[in-house]
Image (tube, rainbow, N blue to C red; front, side, top):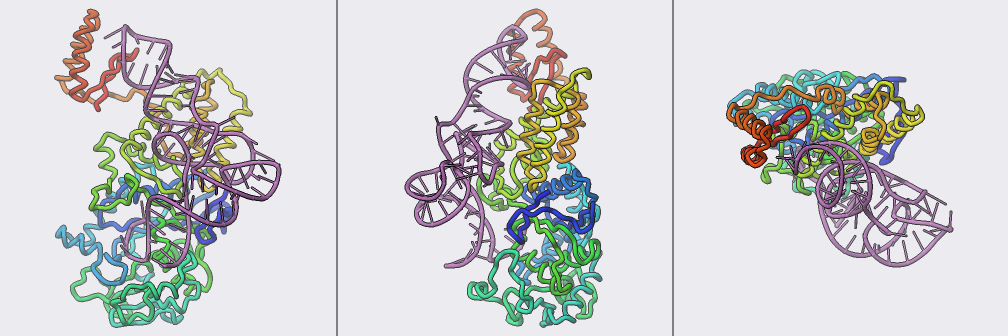
Amino acid sequence: MKLYNTLTRQKEEFKPMEEGAAKIYSCGPTVYQYAHIGNLRTYVFMDILRRVLKYNGLTLKHVMNITDVGHLVSDADEGEDKMMKTAKQANKSPWEIAEYYTGVFMNDIAELNIGKPEYIAKATDHINEMIEFVQGLVEKGYGYETSDGIYFDVMKFKGYGKLSGLDLEGQIAGARVDVNEEKRHPADFALWKKAPREHIMQWSSPWGMGYPGWHIECSAMSRKYLGDVFDIHTGGVDHIPVHHENEIAQSEALLGKPAVHYWLHGEFLLVDNGKMSKSLGNTYTVSDLKKNGYSPLAYRYMCLNANYRSKLNFTWDGLKAAQVALDRLLEGVLAHKNADVSVKVDEGLTASFRKDFEDAINDDLNIPRAMGVAWNIARYGTKSRALYDLLLKMDEVFGLDFAKAAGKQAPEEPALDPEIEALVNQRQQARKEKNWKLADEIRDKLGSMGYQLEDTPQGVKVVQK
RNA sequence: GGCGCCAUAGCCAAGUGGUAAGGCAAGGGUCUGCAAAACCCUCAUUCCCCAGUCCAAAUCUGGGUGGCGCCUCCA
């Protein structure tokens, strides 16, 4: 399979270090607020990567961090800690805030069928590993101490900027006035911060009480679980210029060699063709989607319809289209499931569909193309169990619950309001008496109340809008 | 100012040298008392513009135009 490596800017054949296994690290959430659908798109991408690797028979050793400390509001190494700020506002401890939002996040990814990485690593559980990492860098001469912390000396690391194509010299000229005059270079970043007495989260270290810099946590935790060198590192594109650049600097400085073979980045989700921002009120969450009557998997389907390296524009119309499409796709899956066992399709046909699918997913996770194959199968004239089995196999990658959704075609209807039920019965009676006028009036009335009626051969179906 | 990305039907979106996947919407049909839902059919001689390379270009090259991202925290 081929994957696009941000470092080399081209698709490369994926060759795991260890035959049959993949070691992966993914930058996880900072748990101080609800994750919005833009955040979640990146984890859908991470999940697709997991599923495609598994589909190809690889076992996964995958680590994702939970950042519950040390991530400042501004990355200029100044300002408040995000966790602390939220905690203060809510009058809770940072630990309580982290625990709450971690729980919500885990629930969100479960609803989106995003597989849980084998290791979920909380930053606060790995302070010692981080301190050791920083010590190592200081011993090698890459870290220096100032009055407020330990900083990484980017000028000492000759590869700085290779991931994003940044030019340090150019950066100096364009750099904003740096408030921290003790830093040797504006791009130098904190490895460890000395904590003021009122800082709630702090730990003892060789440099006194303090807390870790943001970037060090990923370097330290990936090393603990995956070893010095591992296969794949994922994250959002926004991490390329600073966070991942700094991770590379830290790890390579300490190890003397690259720690990561493939860097993969998920593109941003736009809303109404623009950025998501709190001021525009468009940072939607999973519960917002549900509140508007859409299933989380409809959003997943939407994400699957665009390449992870392209920007995807979210609109409510688009989500509606995704929901309709997903529902119809499941109808197609069901049709194959209900096919007569005696119906056979040409094995060459099945093999050809399967090949198209595998070629697509192995070409840098081209899920939109793979989805096209799924549609061609779903709408294929001859319905057969063999094609149903193939669709289920494909769903190991899509994660759209083909089996589950097709399994319970007639889900138990939620109990209707007695008043609604009475009207429905009244209409049925009118229909029996061929009193179409009354029947239609009742249907219109229910429609205006938000209930849509569908007369199926199995009886009336009431759909709440 | 620096770095980078993108431009394919009404909308979303594959295709990156061999003659335009797929979805939504729309139009027509089947079904239905009529609808709805579902299913079937139709739906880009053409890929922002101009020039070039080639037997052949949406795909490569040059120029132009129009969007966008990052260089501040962000997935």
